[in-house]
Image 1 (cartoon, helix red, strand yellow):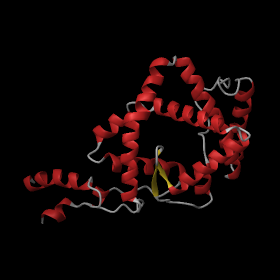
Image 2 (cartoon, helix red, strand yellow):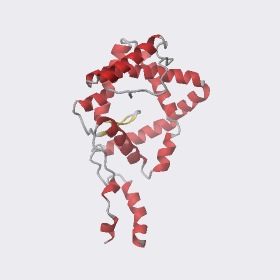
Image 3 (cartoon, one colour):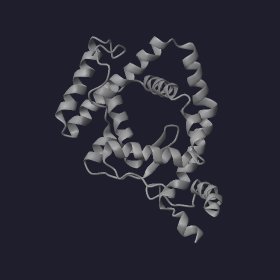
Image 4 (cartoon, rainbow, N blue to C red):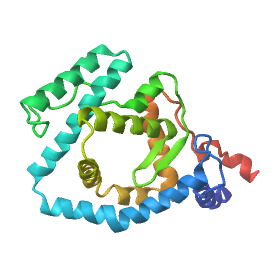
Length: 240
């Protein structure tokens, strides 16, 4: 028992080291770790300070309205994707929300549905690709955006094309940039404090974030739940 207790910290340390255990869903791990470190620095010096300033100077009702505006765009995308997934009930629900909030809710800045909780979660092109058969996609860290998969990253590109060319009607590049920055800052403001939770909960924040993301996506796309390195560790075998 004493030998097992002495060995356990070493095992935990090894489980967080890059290259000690090759994750089957992360064949791009060296590149992903490099992007992850870049994102951390960009967040530390740019995104986090901007998000904190945004929270400090913007009244709560304004922040909530901006969040609702982008959620309303998400309902439009959800209506299309639920249709592509052959799920008519959530498709009609998303379309009805988008129509009501875009009109009576002034482009979505106000939620006039009266719902405390959504009946159906929003969906995107990544979920649609998964429903069409693209399962267990490889993990991929997107520069500046964070955890994703190759499938979900492709879905993000498709979603951006739909939003820009259909919802926005191909606006000027400056308007697209403004919308993208506003959406990113709004999202980062909602996640303030999460980075400290991740760093405090794991010896290897990269692996912790990766496994958490893959587990979350497994629940919504039907992917296989990811394995972690220490699931394959048998301490009795190692000390014998």
